[in-house]
Length: 68
Length: 140
Image (cartoon, chains in turn cyan, blue):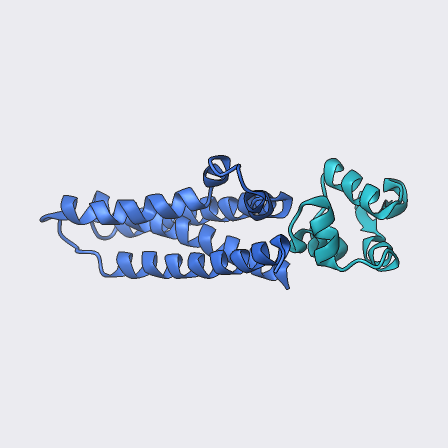
């Protein structure tokens, strides 16, 4: 089974009026972490996914989903 | 400049230092003496360089440096993932270098110091280059 983790992080971040650096600062990670998660290069841990959702005022399920 | 921007600059600097360190290791291996005369004294600075390179590929420096928010940014999830990938690349490079050295040794004797240098240099170079490349690519 070929499953891919998709995300709506870029749209949610832009909707919140944040830059990658601003979001990174808000949750205490580097900008490259935000960049790689947005581009689907890096799959975040549950902890990071929860922090991202909280910072953007969204649920984790609306930010991340599995495409089969 | 805020903390995230400073961390980004340090990440880039670290990647460049790792490329330079890989180059130094290669130059050192290429210019190493072929004979054992006085090799023990010449090996000390090499061991220091290898030790420094290997230590920088681990998260040990960050465990000792917890007092600053910068340490957390320089050792976040992505960096740890890159570290794991680069150490795996180093492991495969060491295996390949060992296999090649064994193959060469069947035709021509290779001394133990030279073998060790080749294997360690190959592994560390691969790990340093892989880490630096992943970090720079992620920062784009």
